[in-house]
Length: 378
Ligand code: FNR
Image 1 (cartoon, rainbow, N blue to C red):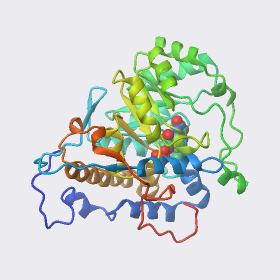
Image 2: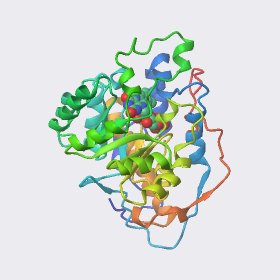
Image 3: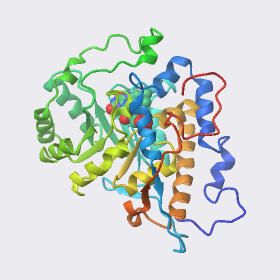
């Protein structure tokens, strides 16, 4: 999308049409609406992390610890925030990260998310523990760029059978989450004695995964294989040696191992190890357009949106999520123009500089104007 000489007197140079159609003008209004609509258990499920929630905060801190080095006087009237990914044009370099239990936030669950992704034009990754399941979600938006993420809940035969179903349902890539050998202690749930999903059957299969499963899946799959939850250069190199097609840098949004580095702190060593041989996906704390711009400047190809996706859906279902993406698009387009670039290809690490973080790294610290009626430890 290119920008036609924005009116300097307009409140927003981009997206005026949708501004008129939606009650939401800012992201924090969507956050607030989501909080109003969710009960405390589901709110905590979205915003919470493991144990001290240090990893959650470090995701935000790592983003805040990067400042921009903008360039000026470069004719930025043709800003284009789209990217090519898996042979498709995406309107933004975004994937809706896999989220289990989206049906807790909106009745349609994963179907609402995939429809929003298809309507807006970003990729969608379905979690294997999200309703209404992989075939129904595929049918909800057959033309969307759909990726599928799996938690192993059975032996190799079980995993391979689900992989075959994902291929048959037209998913464009298969993603194995590898940072979840054990389910962490989420103290927001424990402290309330809230059983999130009851006893989780067959969890031990996730703990038994090894690189030999990656070799087997790679041989089996006719579609690209992604590993989600890579957090070191060593494992990124091993992934490449095993033929993995995409590296997904993630600490599960701070919901698994506590005391990790923020993913933006991890990204440079992964980008160096990968050396452009595969695309890199990243998630963890990405809330604003500027956050996404930082990731691409630092070498990522696609950014995953986890909690913000839940917030869009909780605030307004499919339409709420589309609106959230529209606002992110405006933020990204303006950010690119103000940095002095028209396209992602012009961006690199020279546009970033280490800086003292300006926040304490709260999960929703990206929204200074956010006020919530009820104390909720966000
Ligand atoms: C997740 N995440 C996740 N990851 C995964 O591989 N499979 C899953 O089923 C889930 N489920 C899930 C539920 C909820 C409510 C959240 C918030 C997260 C992790 C998710 O894909 C992603 O890695 C993080 O959410 C990214 O961080 P942000 O964007 O939430 O800060």
